[in-house]
Amino acid sequence: MRKPIIAIDGPSGVGKSTLSKLLARELGFVNLDTGAMYRAVALAAVQHGVDPDDDAALGRLAETVVVDFDRDAGTERVLLDGEDVSAAIRTPEISLLTSKVSACPAVREALVRRQRELGIRGGFVLEGRDIGTVVFPDAEVKFFLVASAAERGRRRFLELQAKGVAVDLAKTVAEVEARDAADSGRTHSPLRRAADAVAIDTTARGIDQVLAEMLQVVRSRQSAANSGKE
Ligand code: DC
Image 1 (cartoon, rainbow, N blue to C red):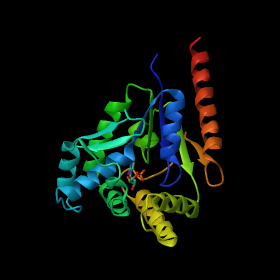
Image 2: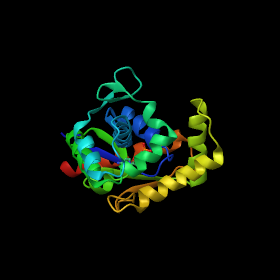
Image 3: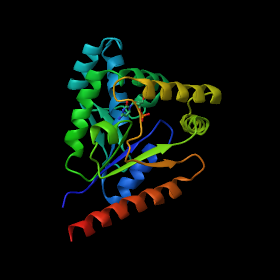
């Protein structure tokens, strides 16, 4: 029996990455961080000197670069043409550039195709902005995570601080809000909740609590699907 596809969408700082990794581990599925793919293309644009306003060149770049995930060592590493870029794709500068690069239709087409090729066999938890609406509109389970911008900014601030990056809380919250506006306001595949997605507010709840709720949803869908087959 084909394993399901689980879509997790929502704005930045909502807990998607942590929760999708944990959910995938609990279920024995593979986690796919689609944001890392957009980030890697943005970094490649810097490395190759591609003008971020040149949509055609960005599209060609997204078609040719190879973004891989190395999950062997226990922690996930993001590889861009074989090079470990896990840290380089997470700087505030690349975050901002990724918002722009990910609005380019040709980039989206190339990456969505790749995401579908990977996820189609099932047993995948994909996290992003358009998984439940565009990449896999027929995903068996869809989640849409939300949290206040102030809380998401605070989480991002703590994350960057822990990595030794010099950051300012108010500036980080403002950056989160700017990215939200860009991700939700773009013409191509804006961030929005699929009508059939289960919405979960993570603002005042711990990871364990949210994970338990997500697992419950997945398991009840699985048992409903199994009993439908009997
Ligand atoms: O989830 P993240 O913060 O790593 O995403 C980085 C950027 O990529 C963010 O601006 C939204 C964009 N993105 C997207 O447009 N579509 C996706 N499926 C995933 C991320």
